[in-house]
Image 1 (cartoon, helix red, strand yellow):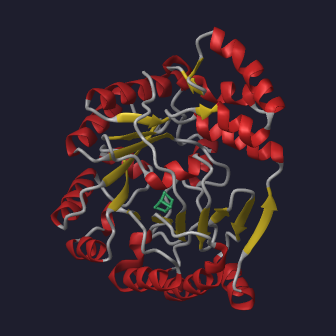
Image 2: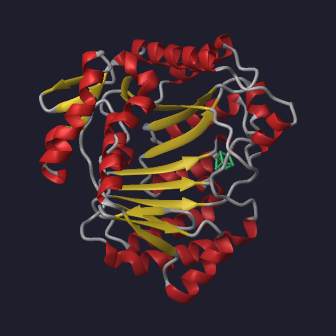
Length: 383
Ligand code: SF4
């Protein structure tokens, strides 16, 4: 099934990391803490960082994304303080897409009303599964009905651009239970769906559960079958498959994430956030108290790394080939030169001949069959 190319618009964005969760899900290795007492101080210092780093920004932003962690854990007191403070600190007048990640459990009618009042026009919700036993195993806080209620609260307040996350390959999940989750989610008709294969990250509770023999990994063939089923069902339901893990109704691709994939600069604020200005990547410290100290002492909390020519090339190839739009070989020529272009086309040739890549109109794209083995093809094209 081909990835679809009907999405465009790449722009600069702001990402704000909110590293608070009410409880930790077993599979998660994102940086967050369950210590709620630090939230108010965090918002205050994050706004100090925003004011200081305003000078890094050369143009107005068009997307704003509050991610985490769990931004909805800031609640109806701190969310307005954060958003109004960001509007004072940064040129956000041109923001067209304002996304907030929420946990279904946090979405009360009051929170939905507050989000709408703050100008949030897109909500991303970690639903993960519509089977309660799977949600319990992942140690999620909500159940399937909670997700349905949350969506309805958001829609009641006029927030009708909703993205839902799903996970496949959950221990004990079957093709049938996965099919049920996908069907239920389609019935909810969100504008956007992201689906990820569960991974076992070192130092997570899930990793330790596997070490102790309490859970077993779903085998690779079943995960592939789950992915194929997902793609088929979503296409049938009218969703465009615009990136390997992302699907959208026409016109509802994530503008913020599309900018990441296109190599567009973005500013990342808060503990563990990353920023990229086209050449230099900045990594904020992934430790709350360390972040507090650094912001108080120096107004910034990052280390920076200038990407080498080769790193920029490899990253461009990898991110672009994951998308339906594909890799613009003319841009590779302009940005990296004739030798890099010649080498790319030489490396791509066996894959084109084998039907794993197509080359047309100056774009290289994965063929439908190759999406499942994209990692190895992309690695072959690295410099
Ligand atoms: S998955 Fe989300 S809610 Fe769960 S611990 Fe990670 S950041 Fe928190």
